[in-house]
Amino acid sequence: MEITAIIPARGNSKGIKRKNLINFCNKPLIYWSIKQALESKLITNVVVTSDNSEILNFSEKCGAITIKRPIKISGDKATSESALIHAIKTINFEIDVIVFLQATSPLRSTNDIDNAIKKFLKDKSSSLFSGSKMNDFNIWSKSKRNLKSINYNWKKRTIRQSKKNEIWCENGSIYVTKPKHLLKNKNRLTKKITIYEMLPYQAFEIDEIEDIPFMETIFRKFFL
View 1 (cartoon, rainbow, N blue to C red):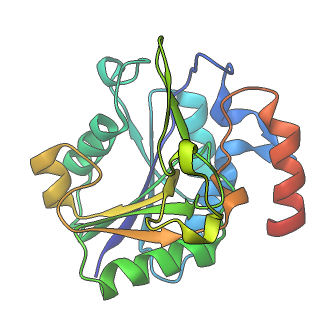
View 2 (tube, one colour):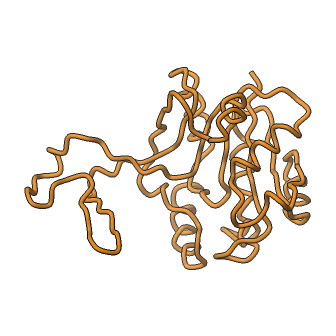
View 3 (tube, rainbow, N blue to C red):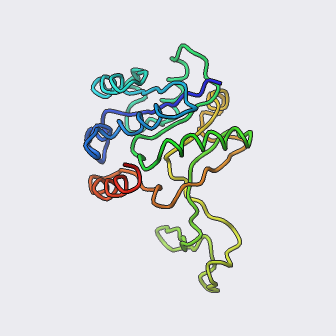
């Protein structure tokens, strides 16, 4: 079975300039996702798609296959799905399963990737996302005019153990799907969806420069 990891990595970002190449634990950020994928026992190919030559050159040196992403699908409004679909259509080998990894969510291990793939295959799923249970949190939504409690009734507060429904946070770290579903629906998630459970601290991702020292502390403690 051909299982290919695809790591989209744009050259620019609104929040952090050259985000995918920032120093994270003494390596460019994208290095860690490439390394985790290359060390997988199940992934057969690791692909990095980017509009940026520096990212592509570095990724190739790390051992990844690289794809030059067109400018028209590299802007702030471009979806990750557009990059994944372009990569699928560009790759010159067969793919049975895609593992989509976001470089800005490095708080994962190679074991997480392999276990997510195993769960995807065991459950005979169409797609899978990694997530964490949020039952311990009282979750609210906020509009301009009011607040609304989502997973409990604030008028009738109960102990957290009595909450009936499980609430999950989609953490953005690992997605698994099949090319045919992605091409047809233009969505990383489709049909029978499975969750691969990760720990709550693995839900953090790098959006702002202030996130880096906090996440480096976690990464050094649990993954180095």
